[in-house]
Length: 310
Image (cartoon, rainbow, N blue to C red):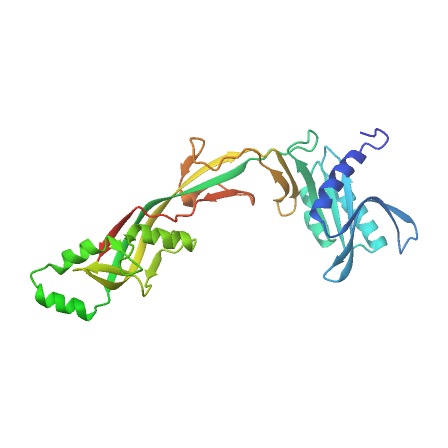
């Protein structure tokens, strides 16, 4: 740290964070702007210039590396400089926070009250745990309703073999389906799984599926008979939670709204597997109150069993 200017290190720290927050604007450290009212060159810790929606803007940033809270005098000082140089917004950034009595006053003057924090900074440190929610989907089965599309040959066969139980014949037939009049066939489970995979269908999101390919047939009494299926998928979800510490993380804390805005974060060697580090939680009582979290939800694209109806 430059001992002749002990606040310079904090200004550089804040400047590096703001360049990422305002990537489309010109962020300048230690700027000098001549006041339109005073005619005096005003020293600005950090200026932010550019266009927003086609309008030229000028923002001023004043940095205070204090252990105590900034008071109304610092708000007044920044407001005075803003008026002199024609700035539309100001940011008073203080490492020690602010007295609550100045919040409303700062808002009226167009001044944001911030602090900037980083997990890897010893001076402007923040503790951060990022919640990870793992949603486990279970119940890989489906209910199947089928509708035969009768053809004349079936009626002829039914008249000749009325002693044959048609329900038993259908129950045996729906184990296999064909798209080429029986030259090749596959199980209905495999056919449904193929449709799910080929169309990238997550059946926890799309709970119903109609299979009505005109070439889809099942074999009844030796006759390949057109058929359509309506499939209703069954599943349930369980929720698990754990917290992880990021290798890199920085944030802006808004002392008026009490909200924290993440600037960047990095997580290395993070496994997406569900393991003993997670704790099962009620989905209605997940204790997450911040705006940064990780949600893992693996799509369900394969069923294992079928239940037939109708």
